[in-house]
Length: 511
Image (cartoon, one colour):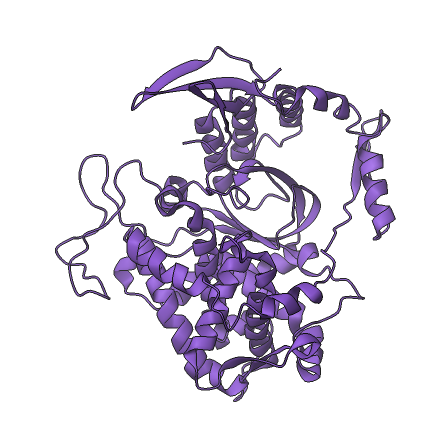
């Protein structure tokens, strides 16, 4: 299993092109009569620059941070030779590198953009830890086991031991990818997550970034004011719960290589059938491969549900400086409103002709909107038309009707994932992500009121001849975005050597 290859068909042979600096001899395999040739050296010029640069960085890593040094060494091995096991070793070291002042991760990480949910998109980030903000997240970590017990599934479907992760708030210096998330929970390798743990990071200066001219659509005037005041604070709580207690919860029931099970099949009862557990992961099977191209969206939906389900918990709110009076507070109401509105906005990423979704998070949020709508009793409705179309959310029903409906949905999401019950899990998920005839017309209003995509202008770092580092900040405008790329990639810029390499990157076979 590898996140890096591109697949090509050359005559009767399938060729897997593995990204690596080294152009090694290819290896041919026979799979059920089909020849598969593994070819090394895809994107070789870029991978060489990457490996060489990280090798240089090792010299500046503090010797006492042994895990950080090991992480960098394994990065070099992974990017030179294209070995996925070396990258997994880098992530094992990264998970154990607790509390570094500068945080970084790099590789072929997220599979959201791959239609089959298998190949990872390349990304890399460098960030500085916000110590003060991180203290809040550490308090959440300290109490995580207690909060996870509040989730709506039996304890047999939760990890035997909660592996305490590093959870920090980061200010991004640079994030190189097609998009910048608000929070991250990695590594994505299931065996590492289950056995060693993971890290959570909240990207503080991404969360707080907002365009002053942004138009808030599909909300009443009253809700628009709540949205403006509370969106950032609500999103902070949601992202923290989503990453730590959402992606960090849930047990995968599996058969080990020696034939033993990691659960007691005679005692564990399926909460929805009343029978013994009959489906589980076999040796070598992974969650995302088992659930296929729906896996990313399904998991994001599960984590989002955990966020809105737990956000009303007073003890969690207090960690972030919020109180819970007798009435549902604005920070909770705004979070539920954010989710319902995001589900409606998600229709932009739905293709009616093929009945498919083009964005994992938005697909998951639409499923949650449907759960809210189907809950009935006036919890959530879509009212009006055209520019007057808006979400109507009843604050007084969140803790009763809303939390009950989301809890029931969330419990099934987790149990079906835990037991590798692909048939039941995807049948339910596809029901909630299908777009009914009474909702599809709203897509036109969403497209007509579509707002410009957020564009993040990032700082440019340079290393002078004297070894001194400088950081410049282009203005936050389209012109500033262009200038930031000119500053990086012009011949005189810090990455000026890369553009000429484009000519030998991308085509197949690798040149």
